[in-house]
Image (cartoon, rainbow, N blue to C red):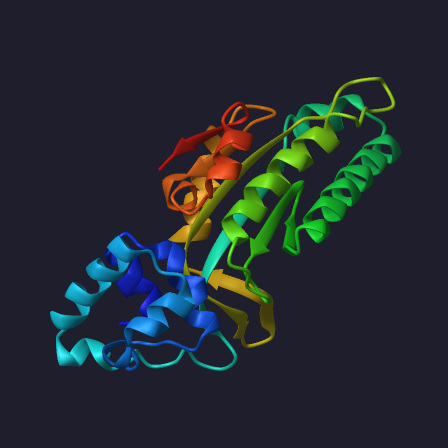
Length: 241
């Protein structure tokens, strides 16, 4: 078992990045002292919950799972999917050069916002964008960064219009969880920074449910948001999952 999985089972997944950044794995858990929890910023009630769970651990659980092959690694990742609304209809109405300019402007606007929140564009999928927050560089507030980036992207795209004066809209979904991320190589085919796990699938499913101009946030992400961001997203993002 990995430390992120253990914390998720306790309902304390918000500490996963903090533990990882301090090099705390399952083998270290039984050795944690009171002052260690203080340095980690673990709340008193959460600390008590962790201590009870540590006392009940099966020794076999303290043996870390085998490391993923090659350069892949386990990560607690926040994944964002952005999708351009009505692109098929746009392609039927617009000249290819005009459509090309819309896609270019849309990608550029998304890229600027994502970079500002230190996210990473993993790949472009047609008129969709897959984004990671927490890889390759993790932050304690990656979930909040993703949500704020999503809202800023929606606002930025609303300023874009096609050559025919039509408004461009997006739908965005965000989910957080444990994944394995790295380069998938099979024969001559390869995919850089691929993710394996349910989190990207959940984000993709939620994206299909989002309304134009909306950010849909999975419950796994919502639990990690601080009080300041809960207010910010209350009017613009819906929680599902």
